[in-house]
Length: 207
Image (cartoon, rainbow, N blue to C red; front, top):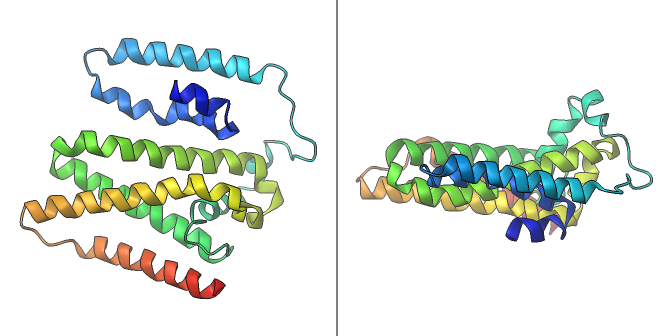
């Protein structure tokens, strides 16, 4: 029901159907049947959503992302770095890349160290995946307008899901290390310090 509501609430809601796929790993005995049913429902909803769909006037063709191979990843990174990027086309991409790296490293550490926390990790992975897919989908349709367009405030809420997921997963990683009596790795501390420094830079840039 949640995915259906998301679909007809905003265009990126369609991506919810893909973002929740990692959750099926929790139902190992029935994952095949559940996944087939989910994919069937997704195809049906997609079909009904696209009936009568027309590209809004003024939009560039979706193939624009293929003709701008360097601008597309920059657009996506800018969109993801929006919450801490201070609406700056130079700072935001660095924030976006740093956030993705911080999340990926912390998530891999959690899975590698204690599988019992895997279930706690999946929900955060869903949030991060939704943010990544949304930024990529936005880039496909908007990259032709330039990276500055990725700083539109309407994208900040969804991009914030990645930042939220990264913070929670980093905290989970540090919690694991504390239980094991180990210190936090230098790389993890450096990434958190980098994100904090970028956030401060963004704050003073807009002050």
